[in-house]
Figure 1 (cartoon, rainbow over the protein chains, first blue to last red):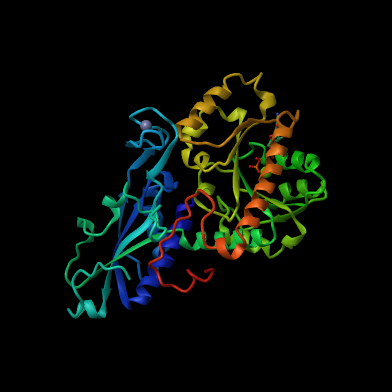
Figure 2: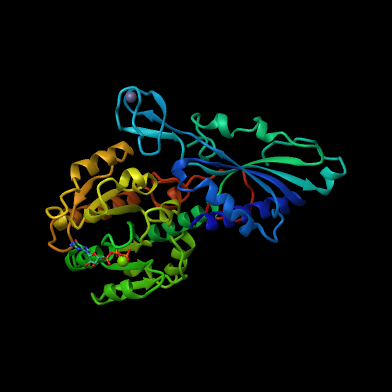
Length: 130
Length: 284
Ligand SMILES: Nc1nc2c(ncn2[C@@H]2O[C@H](COP(=O)(O)OP(=O)(O)OP(=O)(O)O)[C@@H](O)[C@H]2O)c(=O)[nH]1
Ligand SMILES: [Mg+2]
Ligand SMILES: [Zn+2]
């Protein structure tokens, strides 16, 4: 059950972000997972309450965005959406392909509650990169 | 992988993960922040650090992965007996519950470091980093890491190895690459182990196994090998010798300072460069 270890890494990142941004609470987190990351979305969700207890991200809603498996053919250049154990080109059947989506394991975004945002000073949807 | 920052956003997945979608809208009183961090960033940076350690000492690191009992330790024992005696070997053992495997290795006069962190299901880069504190790398040419017997969890954690070798043993059945694509896709070399059993367990068709490897777009060479009757051993040893040479040549052409922050390995250790935490860029 390596999902618990991954969840702990997630919590560490959340705590760093909360400290950097002076947030009191994290209410929502969005994680992107591809099937070839080796991480099960449901197991990650199950591990989350255990890993987040007592942290700034306790009680956050965790949204998991499942990403598709896509390959690009090294021969014909065609891109196809496929299954994790069929990474072959749908156009020409070639098995020499490159994965272009499906192995991600990313923290996409978080929603923070800061003293500033609660008093209405911060912009409502600051989605810029930090 | 994205060319600008090295994160794993490609045109194949950007529609799903770039900001602006409905998941990025926020209620008032809250602040939405786009992050785009690989969850395993910290592990991957430690792994890169481990790889630098190996490279500084011209040591090749090979990670062995398989299901429990596929023959990793038996392979290491046979390898120790037959590998060129000028090559100095050490083994890091991920047998977390017992010292059995480490003791089997030590009987052959080879240094074995036991990682003992209880009942974890995989090794991670931090455990390897700890183990390296007990190993003077300048005394070795090649380090084998025997990962925990498990076809699922170890695949997600880069340890800093240069190469992954996976064993698919004949009694397991030839369809395992289709059932565990994440693990087998990460292989640089595949051993169909316990090949001496092929005549008895004739349900296992090596050709079918090869087909399943093609289905996961694996370009890794596949070798049938038996640690018992030693068939395939000479090809395996030749491959190891070739890899040691390839790594040394690579390091001659790419001295450490210039490659220490680049990825020389085709695996999934992607990380974004937007972040500013101080642990992130300490190897630059
Ligand atoms: N017939 C046959 N048996 C083998 C071969 N290699 C290993 N075995 C047997 O398979 C069993 C498991 O071998 P190990 O080398 O301990 O396997 P392992 O992958 O290290 O096991 P764990 O570390 O527990 O995951 C032992 O009984 C070995 O004797 C082989 O090439 N042929
Ligand atoms: Mg073993
Ligand atoms: Zn094609």
